[in-house]
Amino acid sequence: MSRFLDELKIVVESGKGGDGAVSFRREKYVPKGGPDGGDGGDGGNVIIRVDEGLRSLYHLKKKKVYKAGDGSPGSSKNRTGARGKDCVLYVPPGTEVLDVENMEILGDLDSSNGEIIVIRGGKGGYGNTRFASPINRAPRIAKKGEPGRRMELLLRLKLIADIGMVGFPNAGKSTLLSVLTNSNPRIGDYPFTTVNPNLGVMVYKGEIQYIIADIPGLIEGASKGRGLGIKFLKHIERTRALLFLIDLASSMDYKTQFEVLTNELSQYSRSLVEKPFLVVGNKIDILPKEKIESFKNNMFGGQKPLCISAVSGENLEELKDKIAILVNFSEKIQDR
Image 1 (cartoon, rainbow, N blue to C red):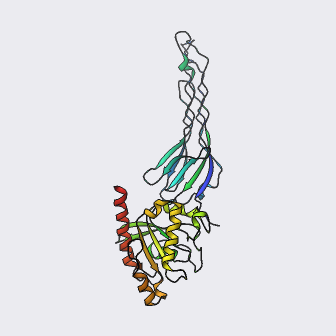
Image 2: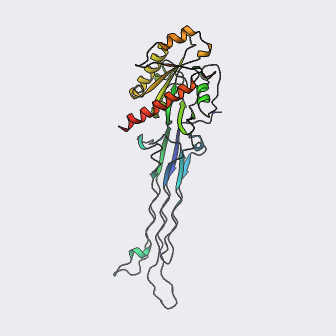
Image 3: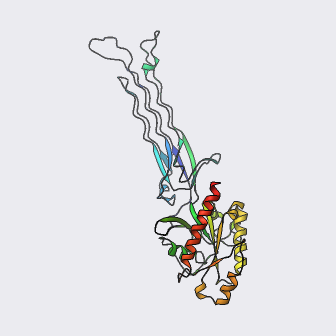
């Protein structure tokens, strides 16, 4: 069973505030001591926090309700009750947090926005010391703590990566990811081998790291839900740039492949086709030279493609250079 989960509903509840105490000083030589009831402690907050090491929401599936701790009641000698323990939920970078009731986005947690407090705990109640006055020097009242709040959340993950690799099923994306990075995606010579997005880290020139995402194969009509559909198109939104991997051994013409892919991205979100991109033809190890030259002489979106073989490794070093240039270019555009 797959342990990748990119969308999940959970219920969260903040802690109740502790009640204030009704208490009076009891000392040997003070027969009528004044009030000394302490305040109740505040209830715990519900916090959603980014964990850079997570890549899925699956770990949160085990429970339906996550609750913060209640505040403790106040006590004598004006002692304030202990604050309730916060409920901290860890999510991968790129997680959106929405209130299910009105679908309002409460937070968009990328790597630069580490956490949000979804619900604050109830305030602790006042002890009777707070109610003392010249008129009422021995109040026998205290305030109860405020209740916690309950909310249903929708957690929605959109992967964050430098490069999003898109192509038709069986184009060789998983194989290419495995040779460019340290990932071990499932690889097979049949469509839809990849049913979940895979991430890998490409180390460039011994130190620079680029994150590459292998998005499950797109087909014509994906933006309308065909095949693996729009479920995975959303993961491309959080990439800096795109790598279109064209299957040169496919029966579908390479120009048609590119047009269908860009059309599906455009129908889902126009911003996707405005990202910087590379066009890479794969499987040159099994193709005649004439077909490779024909592909190389074409222009795609104003640029010439690169030909590689993910299996034999041909031209992979050149591809790494182009990926580095592409990411640097995309960073400059985003910084403007």
